[in-house]
Length: 90
Length: 262
Ligand SMILES: Cc1ncc(C[n+]2csc(CCOP(=O)(O)OP(=O)(O)O)c2C)c(N)n1
Ligand code: SF4
Ligand code: SF4
Ligand code: SF4
Ligand SMILES: [Mg+2]
Image (cartoon, rainbow over all chains, first blue to last red; front, side):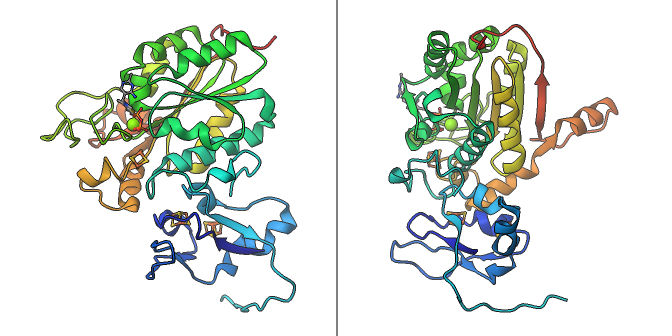
């Protein structure tokens, strides 16, 4: 699964930046086509949902999705063979 | 998104301002509804007038968007006519406690079987930021330009005193706890009242030195104290910091209720 912000809904409030324990959301810098500064994602594959949601059959943590006042945060299926960054955390 | 079966996706994005807590409260309420496994055809959302009261317009069930302050009166009617329906009321602090104050205490006294979620942003958001009965002393609003001088209502305590079977208070920061409280409220027969302290960045935050959305929610979060801790501190005679409010479950009891499905 892949974490995405739906830019057609996000209003750039940065509440997701405040709540994510991994700091996956970071305050954005660029205006998008709607004139809104959406957060940038910093290595979203670290979110447990990306790896384990399908296995567990439910949303884990999910606080960002819950607090997002604009229903803009979702996890979508990846296309087969999407490139992945491999991260080794020590 | 949370609860895609319940959101009217064709109406999104909603009209709320950037970072308005109302969207979060809808998320939590719908997550609770999903957990209850209610059917859409048997669930009715009722509201009055206000930003908070627009919530049912984003939900895929039948709903009543009524006159200002009268949500509980209409909801009582729905429940009396069709006790098999699940009734959920969205209301604001102005809608519930100012113009609708009498309906509020009497719905609690009658203990009508429904769930009332109040988005308490301490202000009349929709009409441009006039002070409400919950505007804290000292706060700036368009009708209190030198700071509010009246004491504020504690809505949850009011519901306890008036007789509601379940009363809880959380904030729009405490999403998991709020969802759990709404679920418990929905399971409890009789009136369940859940007050949510939430942010109105546009008409409250901007005038009260809380210029960003995270600053506003951080302020709310840091002034919330678990009711157990509050009771312990008061019992020990320890001081409570100014501006603190309690969060948690304030009452769960089984007074006789009206409109409970037999
Ligand atoms: C009978 C009547 N009086 C006054 C109004 C104007 N009015 C509309 S919304 C509102 C206050 C809403 O405050 P609140 O319930 O706290 O909702 P919020 O917008 O803050 O969510 C008022 C006074 C009205 N619509 N109808
Ligand atoms: S689900 Fe939790 S860990 Fe994953 S991005 Fe959201 S807040 Fe961060
Ligand atoms: S919480 Fe939602 S609306 Fe706010 S910045 Fe994050 S994705 Fe955008
Ligand atoms: S005015 Fe306040 S309550 Fe109304 S939508 Fe804007 S932020 Fe929300
Ligand atoms: Mg209000």
